[in-house]
Length: 388
Image 1: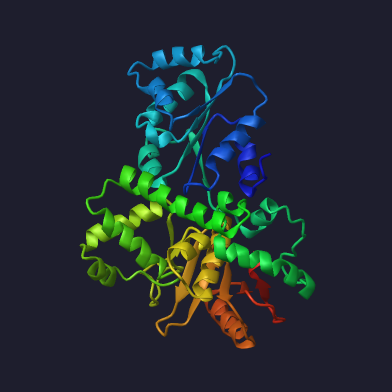
Image 2 (image 1 turned 90 degrees about the horizontal axis):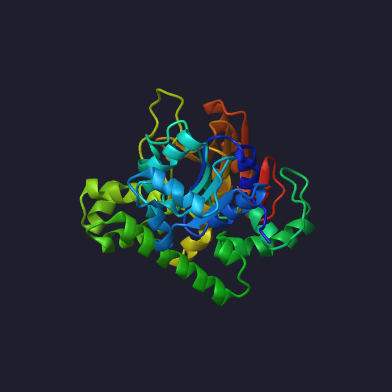
């Protein structure tokens, strides 16, 4: 049985549109499951599902004459007399897929559903060939709300105020598990600590082998490995390119290439400074987070503060664009969502934290501001991490 996820509702309106549906994201976040869900939603027998990680399936697309690919589709059961639906998993293994997809959309009206694990690759691949012919959806590790669904926990969590201490104490052990092991579906569904740790180890090994070594084609793979560990230790801090370059012994340009790759393959997330235009505040260096707090915990041992902040990041980013704000004095707002709402992550907040956030939000013209707390408290304008 496929567990429901928020992204299903986002994709559903486009299941029958003419455009290709492209699903991308970090490895092991559920792209193939999402593709299987979409396959089940299409009430037609005129459909095929091909896993392009299988070399035999990749061979179907090696023809220079695309009409021969049409013949292959027909042999696989596709009837071009009615609308066909073609589902292709792991498209990064076939470099000419964009032109093939464009050809069959334009000439035969095929509805394509495509998944790929690396946006670094997909963005370069799909920039021109499928302009105006695709919708791209990004899938991430589970939010805490989705985590509860996967754990079969049926609790109606209030989104704002009104959370009793009893509900907090019920949810707190689950939230601790989420902070420790993260939201990769395959990890969440494991039942023991050892299984979860092995699953996290396998996720990182798979990412490094299939993304870094296979797609990245870097000259110094040990340098990008060390960079990953250094970035994990710097969660929630601004990128210091000069310092990282010196520690790793690589040039600035090489380091920026590595960081771009890690962001493009969803391993890290960078949030840029907030600005409404001309100001004199610090606005150049982005802050860095990992894709998943469980993976961060697995790579390096961190204090609860950075892990909690990373958890807040991964639950907010699915809602839209994130920025941070920092004054020259060092006073900052952790997250600004869609340039409208300020969020500050605090393990244990105080009334003074609310006053400071309110003052800074007012300076920026933000009408809404919220402290996100890990520990239970009864403070104005405060919610708990599991209410995001």
